[in-house]
Image (cartoon, rainbow, N blue to C red; front, top):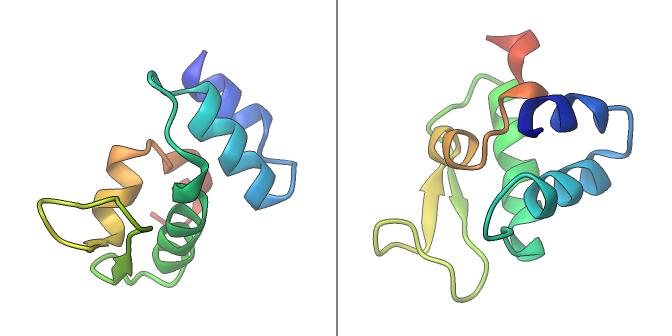
Length: 87
């Protein structure tokens, strides 16, 4: 279901599509507070800024830090369907 679902929601508004993806393609579902960091990571990838440090929402840490590189957010949240055209 995962990749096909992600590709199926790509025609929706990016924020809505990412929300559906995080909630419907992950178990347990990823909190919706991660939608904005995921969108920021996708934008960084579009700009080829893979190492851009992105702030995590309150209560979310990446390796004990309050920020994470764009590439890690993309990898861990399976966001490749939104960035494949720029790779």
